[in-house]
Length: 168
Image (cartoon, rainbow, N blue to C red):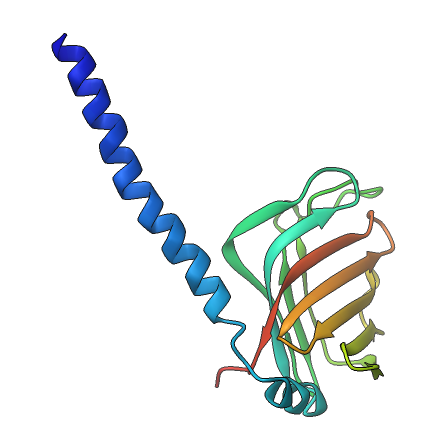
C-alpha cells in the first residue's frame, strides 16, 4: 500500500517538473522567430544572417528535434557551417570528428531570389569545399526557414529552423 502511494507521488512529481520545462522550451523557440517581415527582408538583403536549426529531416528516417544549438552563419565574405548529419554516407570521413556538416568557406557563389509574397530563396555553392555541393535556404516572411544540404558523398538532408541577426 505504501509503495503504491510512493509510486504515485513519484509519477506526479515527475509530471510537475517535466511539463513546465517542455512549455518553456517550446515558448523560447517560438519567441526566437518574432521578427517582422520588414526586419526579415532587411536581414536577407544585408546577406548576413544566422540560420538556427531546430529539427532535422534525413532522407532516410524520421524527423528529429535537435537539443543542442546547430547553425549556419552567413556573412558577406564567409560561411561557417556547424550542422549534424543523420543518414547514409557513401564515403567515410578519415577523421571521425568530421562526421557532421562542418566547414568554413570564403569562396562561394550566392544568389537570392524573391518568392512572390511568401519569402526568399537563398542558394549558396561553396567553391572551396569538395564535400558540400550546395546549401539551399527557403526563408519565409515570419522568420522560419528550411535548409537543404546537397553533398557529393552523402544523402541530402533537410533542416527546419529560423533565421536571426548575426550576434556580434
